Amino acid sequence: MANKVYADAKSALEGLCSDGMTVMSGGFGLCGIPENLIVALRDSGVKEITVISNNAGVDGWGLGLLLETKQIKKMISSYVGENKEFARQYLAGELELEFNPQGTLAERCRAGGAGIAGFYTKTGVGTLVAEGKETKVFNGETFVLETGLVADLSIVKAWKGDKEGNLIFRKTARNFNPMMATAGKKCVAEVEILVETGELDPDAIHTPGIYVDRIVKGNFQKRIEQRTVRQRESA
Amino acid sequence: MAWSRDQLAQRAAKELRDGFYVNLGIGIPTLVANYIPDGVEVTLQSENGMLGMGPFPYEDEIDADLINAGKQTITALEKTSYFSSSDSFAMIRGGHIDLSILGAMEVSDRGDLANWMVPGKMVKGMGGAMDLVAGVKRVVVVMEHTSKDGASKLLKQCTLPLTGVNVVDLVITDLGVFEIDKYGSQPMKLIQLADDVTLEEMTAKTAAPFVNALR
Image (cartoon, rainbow over all chains, first blue to last red; front, side, top):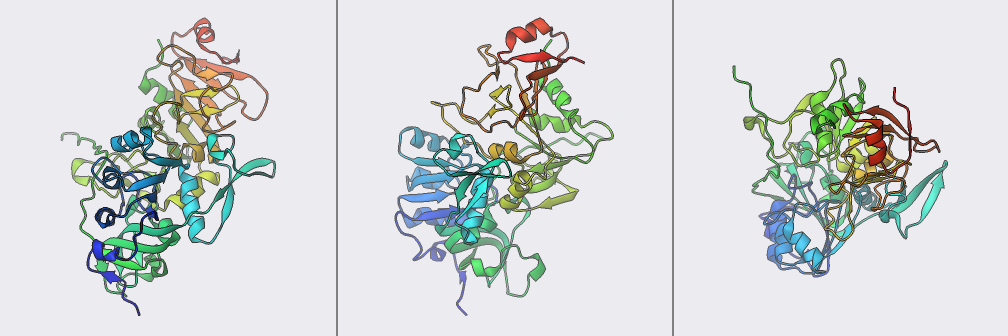
């Protein structure tokens, strides 16, 4: 049985990076992003990447790191409002951008990983998103054809994983990670806790190890974008 | 006096029904959670992958793995469940969410909605808005009645790129409330005026045709 466990994020990406590649990167905002693998991707020096990710990180963290070094050629995202360097590069014509509605983006990744070439959705009918795309009427309602997405590499973040690559996500850090794990030709997962095979409850596994080629235990900052709290009423 | 942001949220909260699954947009819609009427229990969905959203955490409860769609830290409830983004939008697109309350830049009298893009300005993206308006059973818009330069945001036809076509059921502005017959041909109905707003003022400030159906 091939060993899936790598010592660090850098070695986990060895041999998987080439200029012009397409990378799926899990996470929503900064929640559940593969922060170690993003740094390793930057350090690999790979250029002209197309990145499929719901968001584009923030200045100085997450995918924002790959924008600073201009390693990203194109982004496929649903919302990129948290990043000044992104706006600067986009407005200067240095960065291509394809907006997908969030649910369409999630489903495109799911479909890509499941071998489904395309699907019809109500989302975006009659808007810019549907321009140039085939539409079809089902039961009197118009749907637009969207295609499945695949990537050369997907990088995902889970809470726990075992040496087989089985993954368990935690709370809302799950987000895009499970679908993206299925849609990369190669998938590398980083986890907070790496356990021996057999220690995870098979009924609790979110992503079966078949989708995960390499796994690495990371060190996490887990930054928070909007720290919102309430005050305890004084007794 | 036109309604304040909190009064708008309070009026929108009257659209909640006991047992509803609800998705609240960013901005004024988020405030609706503060005004859930007595005897009404709703379950809030957050499209990043959570059902049963609780209030903001106390300082010592903050969890980086637990955020809402506005990327704010939040808490869970006893009934909470977590799921992937594709499951989340299956709920939304599949018509399982009862009500969505969203902000808007423009709404037409046919229920077209524009709330994601101003050409020539940096576009941040539509996020989940297009999926929500396409799939949720009932869509309520909460917005200022006019733009900063005083132009009506209720129009015969939207001028900005659309988020959805024939999607809005009810519009609540700081001046009043309109019902929209989104699939039919009936004109928009004015059903309520904000405190001290006159029909004359409403007519002067509304570019879309409407009929007076004040109750």
